[in-house]
Amino acid sequence: MKTILATGIAGFIGFNFLKYYLRTYPERRVIGLDNLTYAGNYDNFSALSGEEQSRFTFIKRDIADPVLVNSLFEEYDIDGIINFAAETHVDRSIQDPSAFLKTNILGTGVLLDAAKNSWSGKESGKKFLQVSTDEVYGSLGTTGYFTEDTPLDPHSPYSASKAAADLLVKAYYDTYGMPVVITRCSNNYGPYQFPEKLIPLIIQNALHHQPLPIYGDGMQVRDWLYVEDHCQALDAVLEAGRVGEVYNIGGNNEWENIRLIRLLISILQDETGDPQINETLIRFVRDRPGHDRRYAIDSSKIQKDLHWRPTTDFTKGIRTTVTWYLEHTEWLKKVSSGEYLRFYEENYRKR
Ligand code: NAD
Ligand code: TYD
Image 1 (cartoon, rainbow, N blue to C red):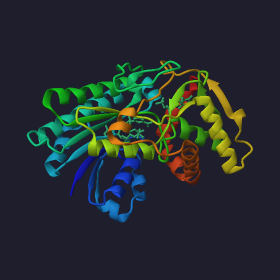
Image 2 (image 1 turned 45 degrees about the vertical axis):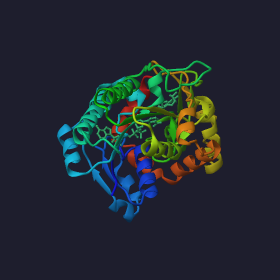
Image 3 (image 1 turned 90 degrees about the vertical axis):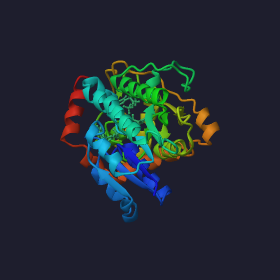
Image 4 (image 1 turned 135 degrees about the vertical axis):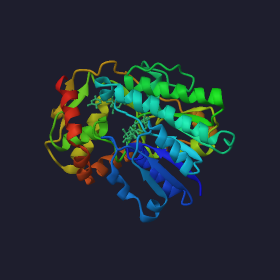
C-alpha cells in the first residue's frame, strides 16, 4: 500500500488535505505527524470515517526532532512527504520569530535529511513536496503577478522563514539530487481555519458583535483560493509534478481587505438575520509593520503542465465557508483557547 508522510495535518490546510487524500485514494495510507500547537486540533480527526481512520496513523511529535523523524523512516516504507507543518501567522512572527525559525527552517531541514538518508539510491518514484507560500515573493504594486521566476523578497519573519526553507529544499535537489518539488500558494479560505486569520476572525468577532479590526487603510489585496482547490493542486503536484520545479497556485481572485470584510458582513446578515452584525463594527486599526500591499499569483504553469485550475466559484465558496463556521460555533469556541486569547489581547492591544 502506497504510504505518504504528511506533516501539520491537524491544522487548516493539512486537515483538509488529509480528508481529501484518504477519500480520493482508498488504497493509500497516511502517516500524520503533528505536535498539536495552538493551531492543530486533534478533534478534527473525528470527522474521518472509520475506514479512513484505519488507513491513518497519527503521531503527536515535532518535525524538528531528528531521532523521531529518522525512526519513522525506519518503521514505515514512505513513498512521499508533504510538509504542511509550520508556524503560519504573520502577526505572531512579528511578536516572536523564534518558533518560526525552529519549525519552518530547522524542521524542514530535519525532514529533508531523514528522507535523504532513507531514500539514498532508491529515489525513483519518491517525492518530497514542500508546501510554501506566495508571501516569499514579497509585495506587488497595483499591477503584475508573481511567477515562479519572481525573485524571493520576503518581508515578515514568517515569510523569511518560509523562503529559507524553500532555499534549503532547492539545495537538497541541487546537491544531492533529492526528488523535491515546491508549491507556492496564495491565501486559502474554507472550513477548519484557525480564527486568528482574517476570514474566520471576522466571522467569529461579528457573531459576538465585537469590533472587526482592519489594518491600515484596508486596501491591501489578497488572492483568495478555496482550500479544496489547493488540495487538488497539491495532489496533482505530488502525482505528476516534475522534480526540482516550483509551481505557483492561485485563485485569480483578488480582493481588497475592506471589500472582503463588507462582503462577509452582508453574507452574515443574510444567514443570521442579526441586525447587530453591520458595518458599524468595522474599526480601522494601526497597520501591521512591514505589511505586504498586494499578492497576486500567475498560476499558468501548473494550469498548462498539470491541467489544474481552480474550480470553486468564489461567491459559492465564501458562502459555504461562512455557513460552515455558523454550523461549527462549538469548534470555534473550542479552538479559541486561553493561549489564543492571550495572543489576541497582546496583538490588538497596541492597535
Ligand atoms: P496552520 O497554522 O493552520 O497549521 C499548522 C499545523 O502545523 C498545525 O496543525 C500545527 O500543530 C502543526 N505544527 C506546527 N509546528 C509543528 C512542529 N514543529 N511539528 C509538527 N507539527 C507542527 O497552517 P495552514 O494554514 O494549514 O498552513 C499549512 C501550510 O501551508 C504552511 O506551511 C503554510 O506556510 C502554507 N500556506 C498556507 C496558506 C494559507 O492561506 N493558510 C497559504 C499558502 C501556504
Ligand atoms: P491573514 O489572514 O493574516 O493572512 P496573510 O497576512 O498571511 O495574508 O491576513 C490577510 C489580510 O488581512 C492581510 O492583509 C492582513 C489583514 N488583516 C486585517 O486587516 N485585520 C486582521 O485582524 C487580520 C488578522 C488580518
